[in-house]
Image 1: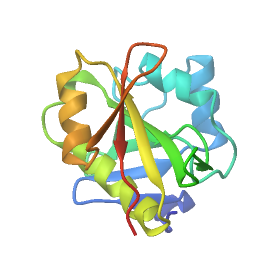
Image 2: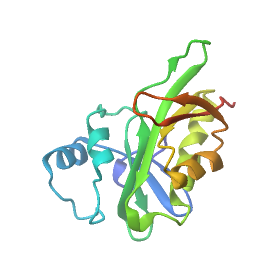
Image 3: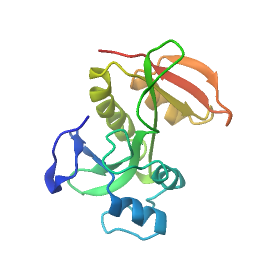
Image 4: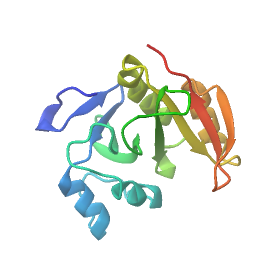
Length: 168
């Protein structure tokens, strides 16, 4: 699901961002509360710490840092909650999560990151879902811009379950 990047950490590139698969050192720092030099002052967020629980070495479906190119600064994370699994209708489906530190919001970078992550997923014909709080208008806009066109209702946490149909 990804190609080579400088530093030998797999990544997906856009005009402004790199989506870098987490490695053991990144996850250890997030879990321990250590601060790495290339992290924004507000990273990791609570959601990032939650994503560290899902990490497995070398899993291309795992969490990734959203790195702002040029500044080489980690401003958030994006990734799946595991590899795709067949849904009730037999279509492979995976759940995605994404988020940025507050200072990075409002510049289209979450949309850019989500669309970049969808490219390899589309090639595999995977349908993607995301849970977004109904009060999170920005998160809803990001999902809509990335092609999440269906609403499945809400999950146990009250978040709307948005779905991006499989493409390919």
